[in-house]
Image 1 (cartoon, rainbow, N blue to C red):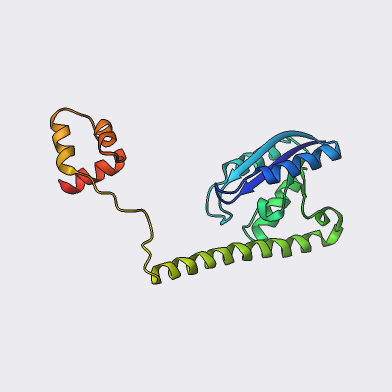
Image 2 (image 1 turned 120 degrees about the horizontal axis):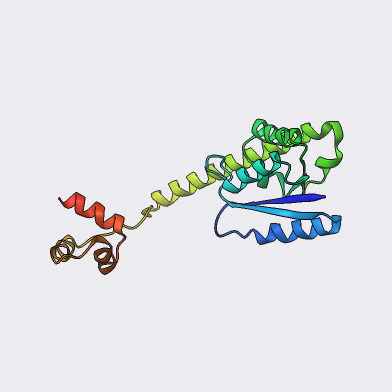
Length: 193
């Protein structure tokens, strides 16, 4: 059987290798041929593009493989019950099977499959909401403790920048000389004008 692996981590600090090693090993034990791997690093908020996921769904629609193996349903989708069921139903319409490595009961629960998926998708969506609420609470606590959030302010020596411009130097070399980005330099010059 030809399969595709899909993996997703939420931040650059996390590592896809944990998921990928287990998925590859499982596929090998089943005698499945891995024809593609699709890996996204993006939060599960459902608000950001998952380019590799979109490519996975396109390839599934083109019958590039028989099955998609993902580590856990919340790695596949945290968009809520309806969206998750829509995606899995769409895969079914492509004659593309799917399998959750951590939740093998999806394959064996027959008519109860949709109920189990609904519950799991709802739990995944609630976890996404809870993470957002914990993040907001943490930020509020930090502000109350006097921490300044966001990027540190960058000061640009406008006089030096203007002097270097007068000598015929371009924005990129000036930015490098002043150790700021070109965008920061451009904004500072506009603001000072």
